[in-house]
Image (cartoon, rainbow, N blue to C red; front, top):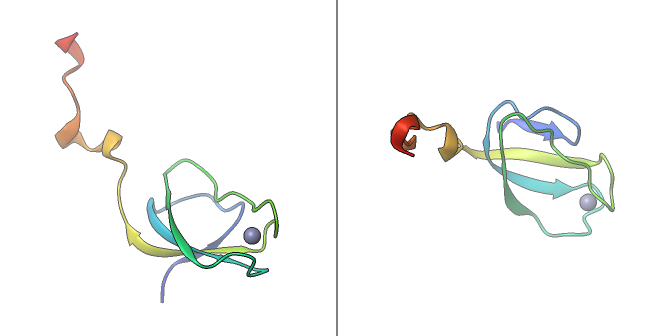
Length: 73
Ligand SMILES: [Zn+2]
């Protein structure tokens, strides 16, 4: 069972989420949600949106393998 979140929840697992609008005014699609943000409300159906975790993915900015040395400037 995929992790499911509503608008207003904190993003605990960053990654790609499938968006399901309560009013079904849009087809399902995928978005990227990053750590430290909240799942946003929709302009049309407000809080009635489900975010289903499709696959976790970390923000490359937090990946130590891609961090530039601080003293290189
Ligand atoms: Zn909506």
